[in-house]
Amino acid sequence: MIAVAAAAVLTVVSWSMTRTAGQAQRLSRIDDGRPNFSGVWQVLNEANWDLEAHAARPGMVTQVGVHPLALVPAAPVLALGAVGAVPGSIGVVEGGTIPYQPWAAAQKKENAEHWLDRDPEVKCLLAGIPRSMYLPHPFQIIQGKDKVEMVFSYNSSGRTINLNKVESLPVDTYNGFSVGHWEGDTLVTEVTGFNGLTWLDRAGNFSSDRLRVVERFTPIGNINDMLALQYEATIEDPMVLTRPFKISMPLYRRVEPNAQLLEFRCIEFVEELAFGHLRRQQLVKRWEGLTLNVDITRKVPKDDNLVYQRDYVMPPRR
Image (cartoon, rainbow, N blue to C red):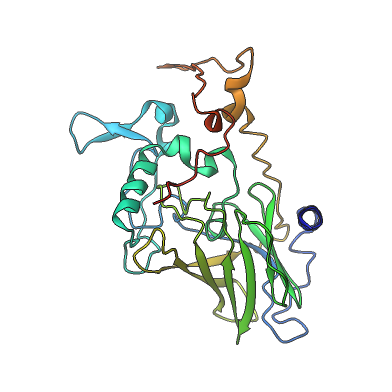
């Protein structure tokens, strides 16, 4: 069953990568009268850096400079300069703050301090839901009567929203299991069955395998144009949170004539990062710049799970 499902997703991904938005028929509604969400979409915000409101900072990894409040980029990101800086944001969390349990708030802080080692995005693991919706990569919606397929450029991955009755997946996954229905012109989904290995952003916000996400996709403005969707996600996680919280943001249609998804098969890009310590002969050793040199020294963790990158993002069970 899993193999069949995987083959189906790969077929959709392959098809979507070669089909452009301009080739898809632009209709405001499909045959059953529902709004036509088919097309290429993308966010325009800073949610993937941090869901909560935050000031700009000099890097994802920082250390104290000449003053305790004067942070500077830490060694791993120093050479990136302004490219590695974090843009400020007004945030997308209703109420401003994610309502963590005390232990989870401490875990979030520790995650942020060890972002480079722990964030699943760094090593190209699936982003999960809702994070896949606001990664800085486009995604495509392919809408049918009984299914809505979403194909993500990031990791050439995808998800299926089932509008008809189907059996849930036999195992928990990164993207969970999505069931949807229509409330007027709004597509509502319920997503469960997560494996607890995903983060919500680059700031260390995380969830457990008890995560439940309820999403709402609602057209904004003139439905005949269908240029934007209001995306809302209510996030419940009794293991991590004291109560549910909601995020909201617009999704924008890519309207250029040749809008399409291009492959971002990042698993190939991070092979050396994830498994370079297992090579007999190290490939990446040194980089020399104008004002600094960067030397890479590999080390092999004592924990076998960390050696083979099997368990490093699992939140602690409390």
